[in-house]
Image 1 (cartoon, rainbow, N blue to C red):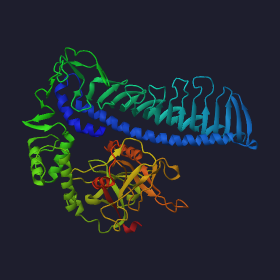
Image 2: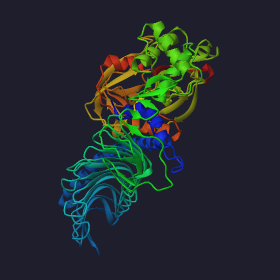
Image 3: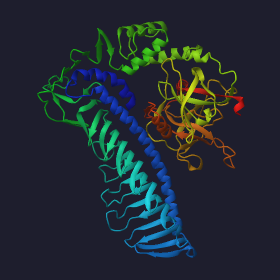
Image 4: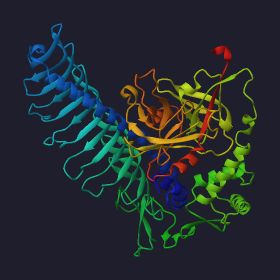
Length: 634
């Protein structure tokens, strides 16, 4: 099970258990609130991580161009070289209007050296600066963009192994020599931290904002991962910490330590829950009954601290059978009926919504397993021939989704809009593809798909409202009218996209000519940048046609890594190879959605699925988009 799937599965159960343990007057936040804030911070950190790796990729490309510029400066023929003396050193290279212009080399009297591009006497463009001044930075090297004599833009800063940072490397954005905005810092100091990465936001040379620490090296934290807020290169603020043994800590962090009264810990097996208290008095590994102690410092993988003060109370105890008085083994008791704790409030709410849509009475859809919901599940299971359990599990969810899908095909979802014809004065101008990114009906497509439309219509949903667009990045956000639970896509959080990786494209090309149920093609990532080396795009090989625009570019786990945007056509290149197509990177899409407050889902890609399964899943979140226009607007 993936980390994020595990969190979702245990979320509701954890709150039930912690409610009995949480000191009512010792903290102003509930366990549920802490977990929600930590997960929100983690999601923002994953977005920052994706943007950071994108910046790192661009920095590597910029570094290559910088080395090329340095090589051109060293390869100048004698007739091109002019010499200009300065108080701090000497310039050898191309000269125009009496100043360094073009490429050349500046030799500092201290021993440092710049090789690369110059504009009006300044380091400007791409170049390499070698620090050889026998000072603090001796042996360091920067390769990248320069503006007005300073490292500014994208680049790679390599620390020398003999200096304090012992061979570390930074790839990303810089502003006046300081690490700024997005980047990745690689810890390469000896064996202990070797391979650890910090990817995310930077300010004034430090990890600052949201980001992800991926720990590696010869230490107990190797394989651990922190996602959340960071200040001064340390975990500071809300975030989640996943240990290599599967234990997860949701917490407000202060200088790498979780604050005791603002932390929730979930053991790897999902059965052991350690909030901000620890127990004493129980001598058996299967019995932890006893008095509680507040943990002042909780280091992942280790607990230590002081006893609870006299004004702190803990209600309840844990014994070998679970939470005394509230649970029976791994199950939770509600009104005499036992339901597995694996049922989260989100799963129950999803089931309630689909049952209501199918005509079953669940009472109030609130994410709580009550008698009416239980009876509705039993009735549904009986009618469709499932084993009668009265519980929410994967089998029930799948059966409900299938029933809802069939209802939609017959005329269910959005039927009011579906029965309404477009304005008779409008014509169908173009079609494209879109995919649903939130349970409230937010959909992403290309801006060029909906540009100039008088009316936009989406599959079974009918008319959709354009609520935002980004013309530069060719993105648009639509709002659908949703009358029942709807499937949404998940954006990939990790690992980073690799050249040669297999991908799948789902869309509605040549609507009216090809299948009205959508087409699926597969291929691979051909390049990590697009036309004219555009870092915002991927190049991929899966065949596409007009109408694919706006559809999802999916990896082999079914997660979104981009939005299909265009294909290379004869107007853009003299020799047009087959299947050279481009997609907007997911990081750009996520930033667009975040700017408009859209709550989207991210998840790591772990298991590889068959293309048939990916296509079947995509049918539930990817739809035809129609652009209707006024003939008079031509």
